Length: 634
Ligand code: PEP
Ligand code: MG
Image (cartoon, rainbow, N blue to C red; front, side, top):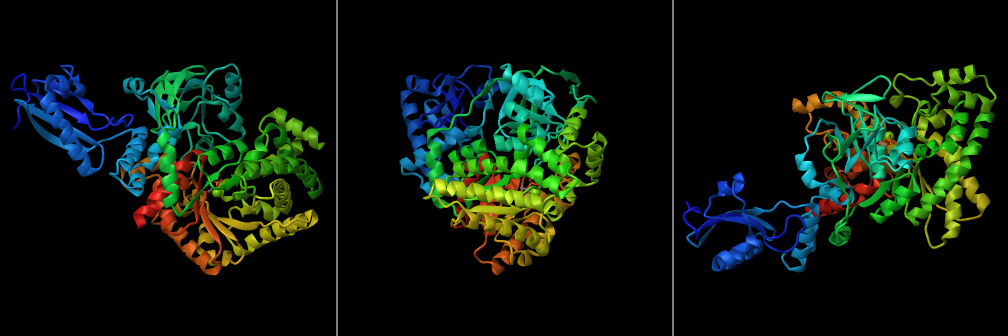
């Protein structure tokens, strides 16, 4: 036993060989003269910065510096050490690799390469992909956060920290933002109509919904902080106030939410903006050298697509076209389409939507600069688009020259007991082929225009059919697409390649992948639906009971966040093998939310997928995870 409290030539301390906050190469730590370890920990006496040791005991300090060098050289990493000095005699008590911030991790890894201690491969393996989130999103001020106690907790649905005044509707979010206010949008759940309001909010908090709920998926795409499924919130019937931890919150009250932990705090916790460190680019460039998997993005606006390109996306793996229908100027035409009674009426409404879609796609191709763009045709059940208020219904009735009662009848007829397993995805095309025909015209005309504008790019649209479960069903839709596309290309007198592929998101599609591959030119795993349908529980409602499953140790993780490799993964593995056996040239990807989860990315590497696709801000995480998977497999 060494005694640091023997006399004034003794002491104790803790130190890091490099700054764990910034990564700077300098000793960091504290020590106390004439003291034992507990005195430092208890905080009764104020320790001195480690640099002071040089003045107090220069020889011991010199020896300590030598020991630090030896330990770093041995472990080839930043060390976190404890030591005691007894009568000017240095005793090292403990050393371990030090914990560090994401910023420090990047700097230390790069410095270790520059100092010849680590290879580039090792540097890539030293970074925890998930921690990159903290570099890409605002965070709470660390000191303020330490003093705060959470008042509730939901799912950590989209990282970052947000502090703002509570609003309860998308319209209010927009209006308050216009007035220069920062807001947090609190909703029972969000729907596609809320997108504009979600864009105006610092953060989104929902009472219902899981990791693949609308709020979670859209917020991740936008890079906005989101806590979803906080069931402790008791919302009043009019959605105008709620009770959480015994306190009633009203419009305008301040609230802070942490999308990385799911924590909710009362009042204001200041946030600090994201700052990408200089070493970020170096690590990413090394990661890109070592990975085999390509990384694409899920994006349906030019803004998100551009952001994803900046963050290294090599294409779009999923453009959810339905998100494009909700902008104010086009929802009216879309509703007219839904409430059409005849094919003629529907065609008139679709013709109004066509120029918007074509313009959207042109902008996406431009943003993607000739890299692949996968466009997924209309997927959600139509009831998601219908008007809710009396005014909107009347407006629609007037536009279509129909009685209000007829519009209401149509809306009622769209009701389904289980819409996620209902009339959606390719089933919409089987009943209304003209929707797919319009989307095909928009995709192809946009591609032709952009190809002409940029002859050096290779614009090659990938048309993706959702929710396929049967070869003949896919073939039915593909025939429509091919007929329309070929006609457009012929009329334009231009050479344009395109592919028609399918999402694999229904277990039957995975099981019959060899059949489907006879027609499908690519597969993309929609693991949100594939997880939902394989487990047989709803991606929106499972949050209600999954906690009990974690408590009972039945499941370790949320299968909507981390891929269930044993079950869903088995279906994927099988489908890739069966699909590629029939069509060796086909490419296979993943575009469910798992495409940005590091362990799921590693699994995708293992089963031989060609790419993962994830929301823009998760692209760097996927790039790093893909490199780590490739390096670990070596
Ligand atoms: C999926 O099901 O994984 C998918 C990407 O489609 P969506 O989330 O739009 O249903
Ligand atoms: Mg899906």
